[in-house]
Length: 452
Image 1 (cartoon, rainbow, N blue to C red):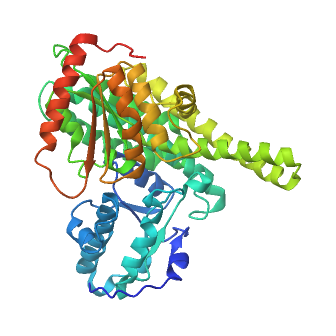
Image 2 (cartoon, rainbow, N blue to C red; image 1 turned 180 degrees about the vertical axis):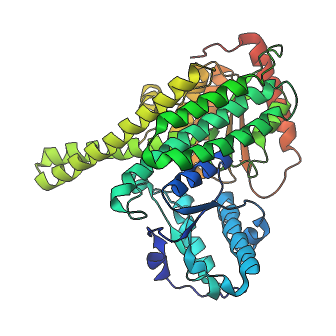
Image 3 (tube, helix red, strand yellow; image 1 turned 90 degrees about the vertical axis):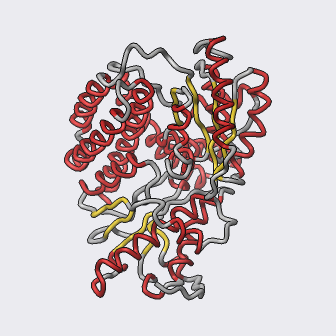
């Protein structure tokens, strides 16, 4: 592949957006390994040829076609799609036709650079004449990641519900791994078990997701939980509990954060990471909250057209949020009857925490809303330390750090910022070891007792 740096700005609107996936290969970048594979399986159940791309194998390509000013996830995902297409071209030769592919890169509104990834990657792909025909499929937080337009209208709602449920179950599988791996009877048992379990759940979502037969999927999850509990060695004592917050990609993508959770476990931690479902719930909640504000403002001005518009959004996003919380609670209730996994944060509770403590405001937006309030929730839950994970120079996580550091000092709860880019910093593991020493001392003094 040879690049020609010519920008066609019309392509940014014509070749980035919502495209019907019928008879297309839907290329999904890997963020959470389990989450990406369960999402792909759900799409396949609806007749979409969805494929999870390898990740980080094309990082050199990603760095070559970025300037370094972009945040790290942009480099990784740019490299992932270029590497995949390069290998496909080598494999298929003259039969290679990128027009048959749709590359998935969602976006968010607001000040985060994530909202520009797909535009920048469109420019990069267009710089290769043979790749101009590949479309970039984009969903947005503006409508709560609606799937309208990518499948038949009558199936879009069911696909969104099944996809959300796959995200919840992927979160639970991740949390099961983090629950059993620090206490496994033999090294490697937990990783092997979760890998096998991921494929079992892939089959379940591909088979039952399209019919929304979620009880059968939960039955299979119950079998996995029971088998996973047998890996735990009851003779291993409890360990310090560490909570992770931060930018969703970095905290989730194992290669990007240099396997942070495993490093923390290496130095004696039991870790719980913020979930992906929490972010999906947040987007629905924030649109619901904005619609209520708009409705109240329109009511004061007696603008009937605006009132109808915002009322429709209140009903739509409020319904999405209620459904998502119902399905999430249903899954966690079934699972927690078998094993003590951490429940997910309710977004309305996080909003109330920020108001109660006057720490931040949902009006500002960004992941800082979730991270700051999530840290307070961790303190209330008796966690022994908190780690904030983010790309180097990430604005929302820098805000989080500035606000919570004084709070953590006041509560005497160990806190660590870990920023990442494509470099390996020799002092980072030393910082983690020091943090874990502090967390262990906190654990010896307090156990897992409520701090606020």
